[in-house]
Each structure stands twice: as structure tokens, then as C-alpha cells.
Image 1 (cartoon, rainbow, N blue to C red):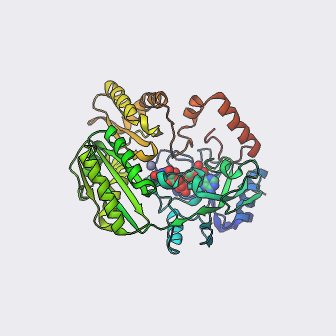
Image 2 (tube, rainbow, N blue to C red; image 1 turned 180 degrees about the vertical axis):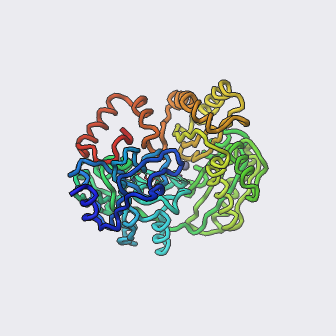
Image 3 (cartoon, helix red, strand yellow; image 1 turned 135 degrees about the vertical axis):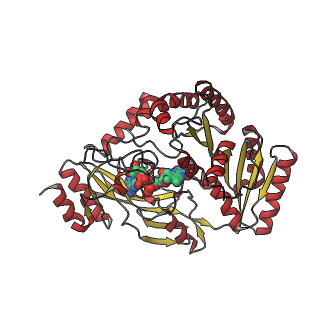
Length: 466
Ligand code: FAD
Ligand code: ZN
């Protein structure tokens, strides 16, 4: 029996796709990685996933797990050898159970994030993970990458929202760790090993996730801030005034909103162009009136202390959606503008302004006119620090010839200021070599030991992360 025969026996012949146009699975979202799979295999349940893994082990083949294929670091697509099995989790899409007293939901890993948010909402509850790709990203993918998004400062990353996992191991066994326990100190934390492992240690097939009460009201505002230092000052003020009610604090530089203005001119921008804009969100568990009072009082204080210039509070759900569309439209506007060099970095909030001044000055000194599209989750110290070629310079040529040199400047400044080379997107193929260069030898040795213990044959997404 060939591997393809065994895969067909495992999941049924019609769920093994080979030949034909498989680009939906073979090309990543950014179109930077384009591989070739031996086959795309679409199991329908956990037992079938386990059978696929066992078939791969038996034939010495490797596999790449894939959920929504929205990952941004080239980890979700096969390499170009034509020998890897692309394991799509998209048919594992059942909401298994919801426990409204325990505030948990148990789902298949292939469930789309938005589907889980909706299932929670149907019970008056909230699954707070929120990101622009939520209409396609899977729960398994968000856990495998430990995704962050826009509400991390209040609810945490995907890791902090996960209580239990079901995993098919690299030898094709099933570990059922689907507990909904808030406290469970029973040895090494297997769940946390698989979260953030980007498909290199096992296949996540199910998860038990934390739910929260839906807020009574949400207030959203955009504020013009003169400097990043002022934005950090506003963040401190908002933390005091809104406390746990602050659920979003995003920052966008003038270049970011300028690109949105240029490419989506029909999207109204409530504030005139300025150096920095903050989008701030407040969830209130009392009432809409209370939300309004607290929020307006915060903005008045910020205005009188000079840390904001002007502010606009969304007066309707449509206005709120329009504000978020501006923020979430930045990557799309950048894509319209042409290829760019992306950095997803974390820094202590206290160092962000110094980092931005230093990195910007060093980049502009080498490449006059370079455009820095800087936006992100300031409340988490997470910047999307993206670099676009100077006007008039070919974007693809700039990427091809200058990426390494630009990265060297940016990551050197990240290191100087005590930051991380990957805040929320992971390592994948894109940052694998960078991780090797920047990690301490002890950390590296421990990571290799974990990989060798859990996946001794190198079946699971080889060449990614390590
Ligand atoms: P995929 O892309 O399919 O896979 C990602 C990685 O996880 C791969 O290494 C893959 O092998 C592995 N994997 C997938 N499923 C499994 C599984 N079941 N078991 C084991 N391994 C698995 N990320 C953020 O953190 N915050 C954001 O705000 C954010 N915004 C985004 C906005 C856009 C427009 C896009 C396109 C992406 C964004 N992302 C963001 C990237 C983010 O990583 C993904 O959206 C999401 O977490 C990936 O889910 P996915 O199902 O698409 O995973
Ligand atoms: Zn982000």
C-alpha cells in the first residue's frame, strides 16, 4: 500500500485531494510562501486525524496542519518538496458543548473563530478573542499560534483563554485533556506545551475555552495624540479610570491612516490627519449611561492635561464599526500600496517611544524617504512596525534587495530595548533563522529537547519554528 492508499483508507477517497489546483492550501495568505503538497487530506473527526498521522509515521512522511490558512509567518503551507501531507482541519467544525455555569465552551479545532464568538453570544456570553481574520481563522490555528488581537489587555491571548485541549500526538495517539478546570496542578503543563507550538509537536483537534459575560455597553473613541509619549500617558490614565473596563487600546501613526485614506477614500475618517491616533475601547458591565459618563470624563481629563488634541466618541454601532474598519484596514491598504517588510514586535510599554525614535532615525538615515507604517496594540506593547519602500522605488525590488538590512536595523533596536522579535504571529518559516540567531543557547537546547521528546521522527511540520 502506498501512503496515498493508506490516507484514502483513513479518511475516504473523496477527502484526499491530489493533483489539480490545490493553491488554496498551498499558498499562504501573504502569498510569500508557495509550496506543493503530496495531497490535501481532510479528516472528519479526531479518530481520522489520528489515522492520518499514523499513516504518515508508517511511511516516513511529514505533515503540515492547517486551519484557516491566515497565518502570517509561512507556517501553514507545505514546503516545495511535493512529499508533505497537508492536513486540513476545516471539517472538524462542531461546537461540542457549552457550560453556562462553568463559563466554558468545548469546540472542534476546525471551528472558525467567528462561529465560536457567535455560539457564545447566542447564550449571552462572550468569547473575547478578536482579530481581523476571525471570519476565516480556526480555533486550532489561533491556539497553535497563540494569537493575540485587539482585546488582549483585558482578556489575554489565546493561551490565557484556553483551559483544555485534545491533541493527536506525533505518534498518532489521542491525548484527551479537555478539562474545564481553572485550577489543575497535576505535573507538567501539557496544554501549554502545545499552545503556541505552531503544529510542530502535535495536532490540536479540540479545545475547551473560557467564556465571559457580555458587557452591557461598549464605548469606542478615536483620539488625536501629538506624540507616542502622550499616547503612553493616555494609556496610563485610561488604566486608572477604566480599570478592567478598558478592552482595547490601539495606536496608528499618520502614515498608516494616510495609506487607508489614499486607498479607501470612501471610508470617512473622523479626525484630520495627524502624527498619531489612538483607538480606545471601554466595555461597561453596568449600563450604557454609565459607560458614556466614565468614558467622557476620561477624555475630558485627557484633553485638559494635553495628552490628546481632539477626540470623537462613536455615537452608534455603525460609527464604532467604521472606527475599527480604519484600524483593521491598515494591512489591506498596505497590500494595495505594494509589498512591504513586516515586523510584529513586542516591547515594554515604557520603551516603545524610545524604540520608535531610534529605529525611525536609523532607517531614515540609510534609506531617505522610507515609509514606516506603524500601528498596533499599544496596550500590550505590541507594534506592527512595517516598512514600505520610499515613494518612487519599486516595492518588490526593495523587498528583494533590502529586507535583510532593514530587519537588521529593526531587530537590533528591538534587542536594545528589551523586546521580542515575535509578539503574536509566531515564528513559522519566516523567522526560524532569526530565532536561532537571537535565542540563548540554553533556551535553544531546551526547545530541541522538547521537540525530540514529543516528535522524535520529525513528522510534525518540520522546518518550522526550529
Ligand atoms: P493557519 O494559518 O492555518 O495555521 C497557522 C499555524 O498553526 C501553522 O503553523 C499551522 O501548522 C498551525 N496549525 C493550524 N491549525 C492547527 C491545529 N489544529 N493543530 C496544530 N497546529 C495547527 N494574529 C494575531 O495574533 N493577532 C491579530 O490581530 C491578527 N490579525 C490578523 C489579521 C489578518 C487579516 C490575518 C490574515 C491574520 C491575522 N493574524 C493575527 C494571524 C493569525 O496567526 C491568524 O489569523 C490565526 O491565529 C491563524 O489561524 P488559522 O486557522 O488561519 O491558522
Ligand atoms: Zn495584531
